Image 1 (cartoon, rainbow, N blue to C red):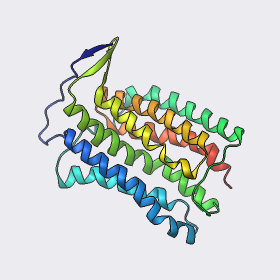
Image 2: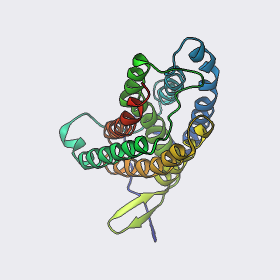
Image 3: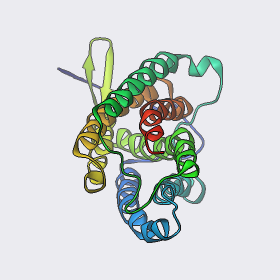
Image 4: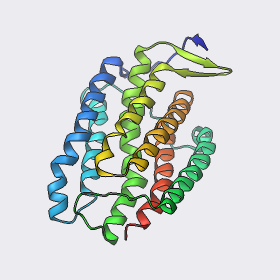
Length: 243
């Protein structure tokens, strides 16, 4: 495995995030994603709002990169919602979307339970809220937090990567995929071990794919769409079994 220098980041008038931003940002993301859902869980149980812990946690994930962008004025590549710039993402959207749908169907057929909150009985409203969450908020929040803030910051500080043929995987991209996968292990106490293990493995693979394409295109919106398509494909069969 050869080591090569990464491509240079194009000049911009706004300061880019660095490795310190990535470390501090990830610490804030990890702490909030564990503390906030537990803090709002009693409210969710008492008021039959199974979707509330997930929404609260991902609202925090949105606020962290927004703080860097707006308050600290330290940015990362966003790209634009244009056909030409999104074209490289099209294959990943299709392949990972179908893969996620297949995994979701397989888990349903295996009879694996899906927890949405302790002592909460899901109804139609809850399922709709969770589908909106999977198809919208989660992709936006996690991609801005992990792909935008953490990955961009780590790659700015870790100035090398690994060459695989004509492709280069940067160390910050690999580390970000690992961190994303590790965070998926924490729901083990509230959902089945099989579901958690599946999420950890798939999270690493999808995060690495999204991170690699993001490095090559500098288009974060493509990653947001990819994340949303994958989550919907994975969650739709599982959520439909809750009612």
